[in-house]
Length: 190
Ligand SMILES: [Mg+2]
Image 1: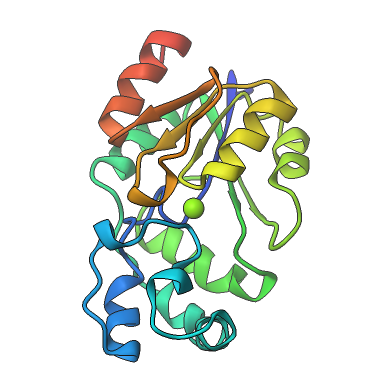
Image 2: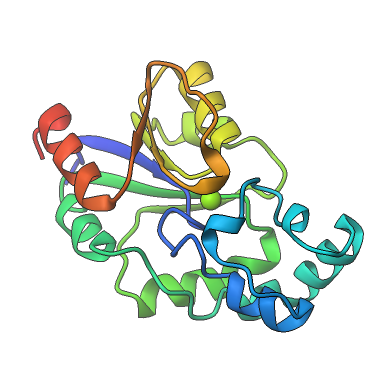
């Protein structure tokens, strides 16, 4: 069956809980950070260690953190509702080596999808254009603005302490997936 719509969806902080890395970080760096302490997307800025130290640890540990991350409320139900009519394309800045753990987690979490684009440092714009994405879901401010401007599509930006910069007109800041569900119902009729 041909699907009517095509959505692009970030994974980390969008489908997974925004704070899912913090228990690992707090344990490793002996901190006590909560989500409200994370005012910048670069997590190392909230830590008493330099960026290189943090990212070296992150690269060595990330696959184990991707095994079983908690997901946002309602997201599994909502994606399953959209799936029959809508191509769901996960477009993530995770790296190639995370492909297998990501697929396993999507499967075990009962999250349906049509495409998984693991873009690493490359632009999400190219992957989203390739999949004909008409609406994108993000939590990183810079990505949301870039996707909205370069593709001229609406982007739902899930509000977080680290993304509160101002946004262009077609970046829609929402708090929860249930709000996104209402927005999509109004705009796409699904
Ligand atoms: Mg993200």
